Image (cartoon, rainbow, N blue to C red; front, side, top):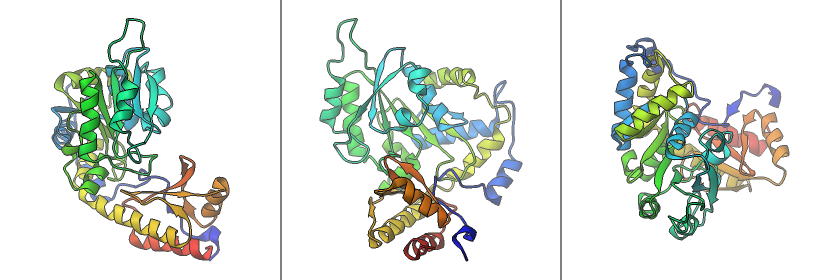
Length: 342
């Protein structure tokens, strides 16, 4: 079999998964209503369930994680405000500048001096500076955290470090938003409930299409008052989906499968170990993301594609993302192709 005819193994993202028969049946049978006019019962049930899991009073379904984050930042920021976030955060690097363009905020990245994806309390304190300066001083009302941190290799922030950062932000009068697109992964890796990773934050987003297998959907959660404002902002951004229960039903099934993420973490660890045996420089994955360094990034990506292995660049490295549509056998086949050249 030539490399051109090899079956593709897709590591580009954990969003490439496809709904299985169980999820498709749930979507087909979903009870629906007009979610813009008077509500959709399945969407409402999902929002209540997600809010409880995340330890928040209320939640709002959105079509995407980018919209969920943009809604939160638009409510928390005024034009010209500065917000702080760990370097490489999704809200800074992967949302097309919408935090600045639409929410009106100016991002300032925080270095990862406490470990991958997270700053030390000292770095955060120094970045906040004097909370209340003269009227012409730059305002910094918001801290954005990310757990897991995507471009840092799916790194997790433990509850104790999370609590320290939130406490410093709160003491300085900042609002805290948590981008929890992959908070389910962090929960499984740390063996704690998702709500243990949201303590003290004002708002949190979470995604159902990253790792859990849903075709679309996220939530943004916070207080009842926040969600009321968020619903209007979602409508402004074009997120007022009508019979959204068809999509929410898939998200409900996805939540039933949080425990399955442990298998993707094991597959990522197995993949990284195989790369290390092959002599590649690779991170020790904390969740489902493996990053490989390569002197010729474009050349290595092309070589892998020639072997039928699809990946993407991330932070100057090659990112492999394990997910529910890749089995342990796929991991072994990947390592075999790399070691034998196809």
